[in-house]
Amino acid sequence: MHEIVFYVAAVWMTLLLGVSAVLVITAHSTSMRILALDMLTLILVAALVLFSDAQVTSYYLDAALILALLSFAASMAAARYYGERNLF
Image (tube, rainbow, N blue to C red; front, side):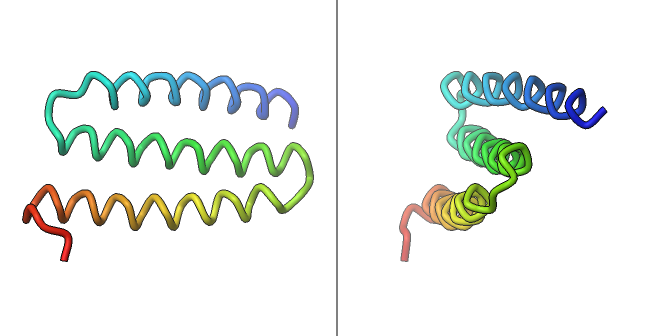
């Protein structure tokens, strides 16, 4: 049962990665691209957590945590630049 859930989750995340990558490329507004890129990194973090569980190692959890922190900082910087046209 555990393997079936893993494969279903892996296929679902792969599908969502493809959809979000297409959305990043084809979005018309800047705010929509920022949201789509944030969604893409969130799905990548979830895929790293799933892969960490499959490999039974914690190194991928560290990578997921770093990616989540960098994604948060980048999203805040992009949103602030988009809203105020300056970073600082």
